[in-house]
Amino acid sequence: MKIFKSRFSKKFIEGLIEAFNGTEDVIVLTIPEQEEPHVDQYQKFYTAGSAELSKIEHNPLFPQNVEVRPYEELWIDTHRDKIEHLLLKKLKEDPSGN
Image (cartoon, rainbow, N blue to C red; front, side, top):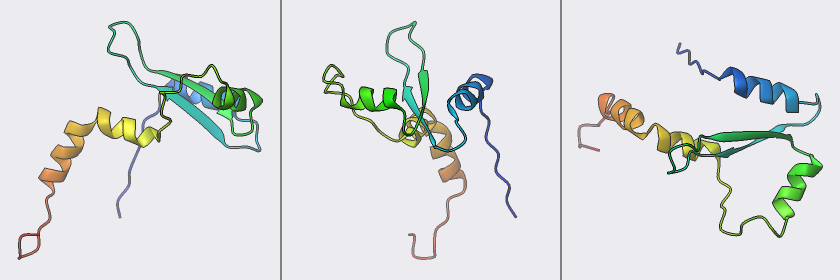
C-alpha cells in the first residue's frame, strides 16, 4: 500500500474556506510569479457559479492574450527538476530497452 500526502499553505485553506458555500465547487485562479522581482504568485478563490467569476471570464477588458490552463501545468513547470529526478531514479525498462 502506498500513502501520498500533500501540503497546503494556511493562506490557501483560508481562501478555500472563505469561498466555499457548501453547495458549489470552488474555482481557484492562480497568477504565477512574474519575472519582476517583487511580484509573487497570487491566488483568488471563487465559487463555480460566482457572478464575479463570470464577469471576469466575459469581460471585454480582460486581456486577450491570457490563457487559462490547469494548475497542474504550473506545478509541473515549478517542480520539473524534482519530477525528472524521480523519474530517472525509478526508471523501469523492459528487457528490450523500452
